[in-house]
Image (cartoon, rainbow, N blue to C red; front, side, top):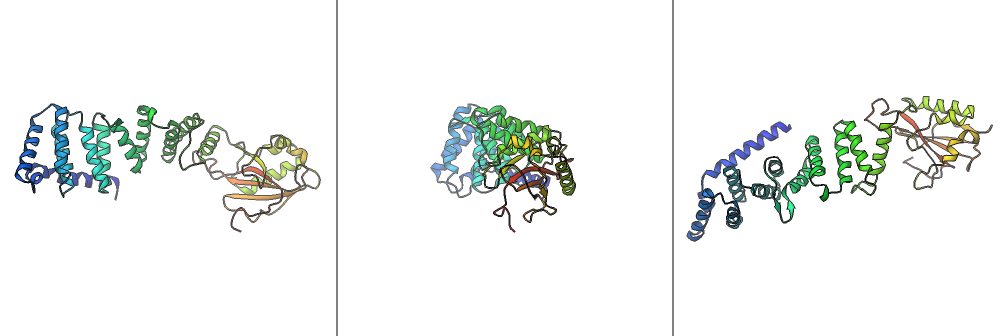
Length: 352
């Protein structure tokens, strides 16, 4: 069902529900004479009063009456009816938050979402038990919404209004992710840069968040001249550069985003800066490049065995990968020479 159709159905259902509020008998059904008299007195005093603090006390008494009823909708109908007839009541955000929470408990998330959003956009914030109702609504919306535009606005609201109650770095990462999904790459880059400005910030459940943001910023702000649509062409360029034995010529084809040189066994790829800057000096007459890719290569990563080197180990594997960077269609899907693994491959890195 399309979003517009879902919203139309939601409002239609709400209209039917609220239309039943004109009958007060449904609230007192099943009550004894004393309870009915007390309830009607409370409801009558609410209709005439603009003393909203006293109204709050009365509403809590109404709550105790209706919360025990078998029909869980009655309290929600009463609260929404009151809010509609008392638009100036500063406690309206709380009353509707109660309604939203009840729908959430019932699993009626479209109704709950409607009220969380309505509170946020139409009612003055109120503090309940030392927490902002607006802040709670933002968290609820973000926990359930799939609408990128809505999520972006909620993340911005958290940053602008509740920076002291959140981890700003974490929120900037989520904001960057939403901008990226929406194709707003400039804003995504700005958000990831903000995330990286918080050196201690982490993203729960995403241990590679900082690495991803760092790579994104690097690719976004660097003119990529070393990538090729064809892996064969890139390998031919590298092979030709090696024949010159000039480090400057070879380095033209290395990735400028975290090019590494490490052994297979290292947990994290290191950067042998001295070796990479002088890579040409380690080539000799016996240095060879295999004609075929290693069998662990796949559509996204490729390994090419070379031998006869004069640095650390005789055998090097050149590592090539496809660039996954939709922010720049000109390089997205291109191949880059991303690093070098030193030594013979003694284990499998994928299913062989």
